[in-house]
Image (cartoon, rainbow, N blue to C red; front, side, top):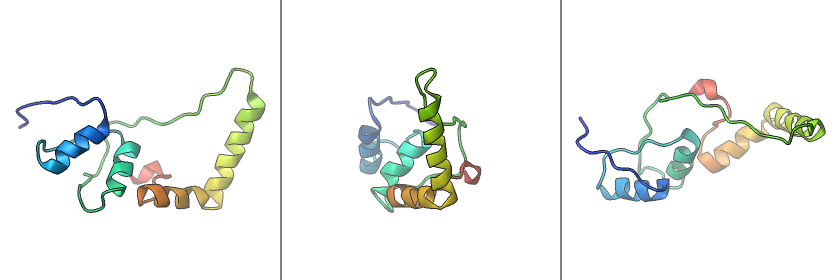
Length: 102
């Protein structure tokens, strides 16, 4: 059982304490965590599963349906041709574009 809960103003500071052994675990959002872990291969272990399932969204100014449609078409194309998965593997060391895997 944890004996102390410590809050940090940002994730990098928490990960530094984790790496130094001053704390035992860090809870953070999936994308930020995987980015940090990809930058330090072999230093940390991610446990499987999710604490919560919070989808990301893109917000547009009301009435700007042309821009919204262009962004959606671009995302659809990137998913279809595999570019989004390649970008994810480059920056996160794995494909995070399919949330059903997590």
